[in-house]
Image (cartoon, rainbow, N blue to C red; front, side):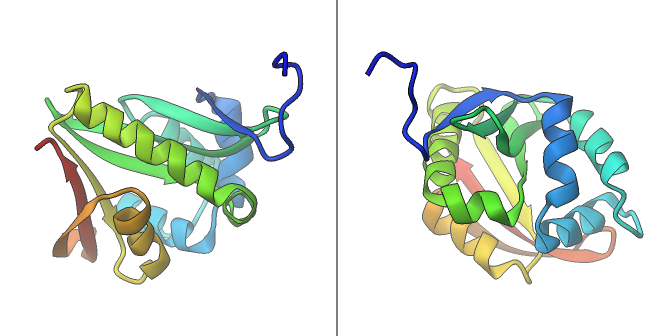
Length: 167
């Protein structure tokens, strides 16, 4: 294969752009919207405001795109302090249904590389306890460890913390 043809379900990692956020954020899953509202403290979901907030998060960011270049999911690692980051991601249910295992493989490799290359000593993910499928994915799919419940951690809401640390 000369690279001019991609398998129908091929995905690739690309630099994240504001236009990716404009396409992805309005189609976020309902549990991601609930999480966004809990973290941001906003009372209602405004896709434009959410895209702006995601765009202003510091640290590395990426988009996973399909073979045609259409963004599937976007995410990044917000640097919380030197050597410690908090991961974030947004994507529609349709992307997970069609490319879930590929998204998982790429994300796990990204987080493993960020830890193993010494960019981070610790990466954490916070999740509302009601997001049971996401919590399972953090543990089984991404290889993060559950650190437990953080009561009233952000904006009066409880969160479960998952971490990946350097050995």
